[in-house]
Length: 277
View 1 (cartoon, one colour):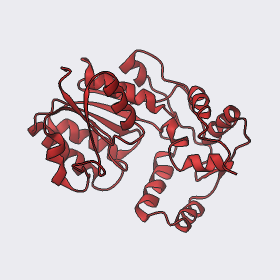
View 2: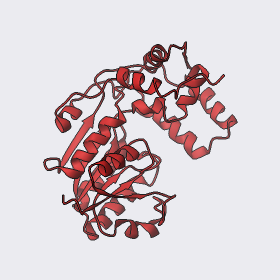
View 3: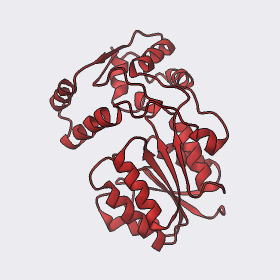
């Protein structure tokens, strides 16, 4: 890719998109961010802004919001990929979800479009503990979730961003699907305990039935579509299907993935988990 080429980053304010954009800019690449808050706006539910977002674009990083599990995502990814081909886009990097049937269908939609692609099929992020609603519970001293002893191979969003940037800028990643995990399996309770050690705080982890959790979300006036997504992720994806490790990070980058303890240490140092009381 020539340095004059422009890379479109969808979801540029999200956990991975933000990191991808920062890395590309640091490497001297021209980056265009597109979301519902940019001008022109990009909305997955409104095709009107898609063509403009793709004008003059050579490659795209695609992080679908809010998740590839939601109804309509597969059709949207297929339509977007086909339009990208027509607009002359050379390569598309799709962030996919490990253990999600809808995400697999979205991957197939990308492949069927004929565009050059790299797929990053990721497990749950470390940053779900620091950059989502879960951080509120940790700050309050108790994280309450509807998941018990299932083990998840949490991965660092920094690793995902490194892979995405490599796929956008370097040869050798075209047509590849990297299924990526962290280096070890952890329960949510173990992850919270590790955060507690790095913060020097006593942070509890409490498991509740899904019905009780949904009631909590409803009481907090969380939108119904978000509650549906949470139910899906905490029941379907976290049913043990992802209790295995992969070498996807090593395949893509030639190194081991970052460990949760490294994430917990550097994140604790920022003060994001400090007691709110």
